Structure formats: structure tokens, C-alpha cells
Image (cartoon, rainbow over all chains, first blue to last red; front, side):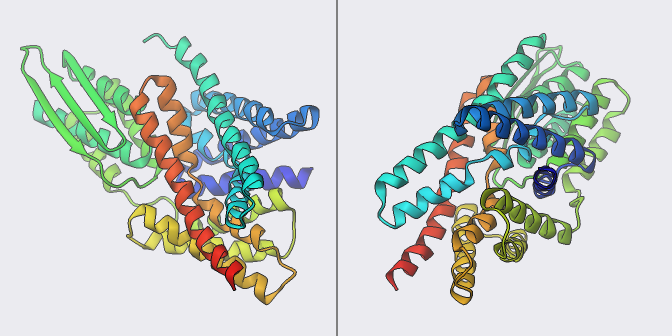
Length: 139
Length: 248
């Protein structure tokens, strides 16, 4: 559990470096990643559905990102981009491609739909919190 | 003075868009800077591929500039620096000349991370992703070196983005298939996935979603398609090698 958490933190920070985040944003970015992934795991054990787990994971991640953005006076995107990496449906997308190459079209379709829905859930999670921050701004 | 403001906001917009800021941030930053220099009406239309800026001063005269954005080079540190600069401009803590100088510095600024740090980050990023998707094993070592070398190649080539993604898929799957031929106990899928994951369009996904809620639908759609194309390019590269492998 502890090792998993550390791995996720490390993964998020590593991707933060790939996206060239400013150094002072790296730590909070890692925290947001861990919070998102932790929520994902929790919801997944409770409900057993990867799609809703991804949605709630990203919702928590985006909340942490928006809070970090206010504290550090940095754009919120900085804390979201690397944090969603542990949640992206990389494995599903990969196996979609693999099954299609092997001629297993039904299995490929199944994985493909799952990948698509998870990606949708991630975007929806970002949008969901984004709407609240837009409401609270007087523009 | 007005030409200089126009130059400043163009630089700001260009740098923000190139480095990976969302559309809403680009437009809002330019409007705030324009207001700080007493322009009456400021219209900005930003897309991921170009930016239109029109400034109208108190006498009703207007200045317009169109800038085409061709290559995106993700560097979120620049977004953060420009964000900070625009706060200071709005608070009038910096003169126009100083702002222009600083903006030029930001635009031409070099990476804040040494190259070796990005290579290592890619290696670690790929390795950790494989760890929490497939669990631990000797594959992790292969992933580390694969991702390390892929990032090295990515940072030093100047090929069209789509083509370079296809080639990346190629490289990753050659690595995975090669290693699993040498050591049959290794899972080639774990290795390939771990390597290509460093190309995942995380920024495009985030920005597409944020653009769509902010009402920048066109920009959101463009970014969404970019993310999809990236995934497709990688899949093409990997599929080509795996397809060949299943023939032999």
C-alpha cells in the first residue's frame, strides 16, 4: 500500500518533469496524483466499476489541483496534467489495439469502449469541477 | 507605445499557446494586459493553431495582429512565468519596457531541467506506470531503458509530430518484442505499454476538457482530435510491428 502510494507519487512527479512543470509545482502535483489514484482505488473496491472510479478519482484530483492553484498562485492545469496519468486508460487502449491486430474484434471492441468511456469519465471529472470554479468567478 | 503593447500581448499569447496553456487563459491574460495599458476594447480570438488580437484605444483607433502557431512545445514552466508576469503588469509593478524584455527572456528561455533529468523522468514514469498496471518483474528494467532512450530520441528529432509518434510506437514495440524473444519469460505487452505511455497526451486531454467548459468549443474540439491522433499514431506504430511479428 505504502509502496503503491510512493510509486504513484513518483510517477506523477516524473510525468511532471516530462511536461516541464515549474519545480515548485511538482510536489503538489504529486499530491494531487496520489489523491486521485487513492480515490480511484477506493471507489473501485466499493463499486467495482472502473468508469465511475475514474470519474471520482479525477474529481478529487481536480479539487486538490484547484486548491493548490489558489495557494501557489499558479494555473490549475499545472497540477492536473501529470496527476491524471495514473488514471489514463493506457492499458485498455493498448489491448484494444492488440486484439484488433490479432483479429479478436469483439474483445477489441469491448476494450475499446472501456478505454473510450474512461477517457470520457476523466474529461467529465475535470469539467465537473471546472464548472464550479467558473460559477464562483465574477466575469 | 501602442505598437509596443501590441507586440507584448502578441508575445504573451504566442508563448502561452505554444507552451500548452488553455485557450481561456490566453484570452483572459491578453485582455487584462490590454486593460492595464488603458485600451478601451480588446478582442482576442485564440485557437491552438493561431491567434487574432485587436486592440482599440480611447480615440477609437484600432490595431490588429494575427499570429500563426505552428509547433507546440509543451513547457508548462513558461505558462507559469507568463502568468506571474501578467499579474505584475496588471498591478503596475513593472514598466512596459521591462515587461517586453522579460517576455523575450521567457520566450527564448531554455529548459529548466537538464536533458538527463527528462530522460530519467521518462524512464521512471514508464517504469512506475508498468508497476501499477502489471505489477513488478524484470520487465520494469526493460521499460526503464526503453523509455529513457525513446525520450532521448524524442527530444532530439525534428520530424513531423504524427510521424514521430508512429516511429515511437515502432521503437517501443521493437524493444518489447526483441526483449521477449531474447528472454521468453518477459511479457512484451508490459514493456511496450510502459514505453509508449510517456507519449500519452495528458495535456491535450486536460486542455480539451477545460476549453470545452469555458465555451471555447472550437479549440476544445481541435485539442480532442489532437489527443485522438496521438493515440492513433502510437497504435499504428505498435500494430505494424506486432502484425509483422504474428506473420513470422
